[in-house]
Length: 126
Image 1 (cartoon, rainbow, N blue to C red):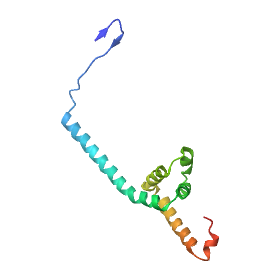
Image 2: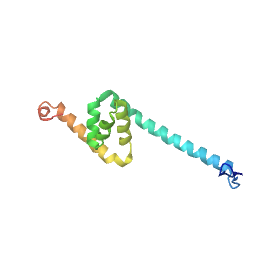
Image 3: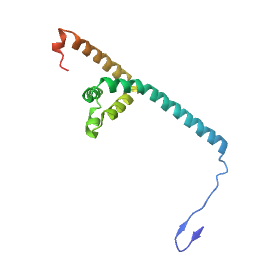
Image 4: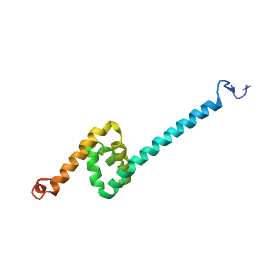
């Protein structure tokens, strides 16, 4: 439809190849898959979140972030503890970073062992 006064034209074309039933089923399957993935990630995050919330201070969480090389992002955005934990957990559950996460956990274990030893604790600056 064209109106010579407005210089605007438009047309409506119906797509006859569109199959509502198949596309709707595909969309619903995709949504179910995304929901399951989200739920699985949430389930993975709960133990991490509880551990970090109960056993770590913001300073200790930032130390972990520094080890991973992601501390600048938190300091620039002035994140609170929950935000730091959330981003840190997202980093740690990512399979791409599993090697560095395992190494960090191993190093933290050794550092705690040294801190708890009567003789060695005087050599640990942490």
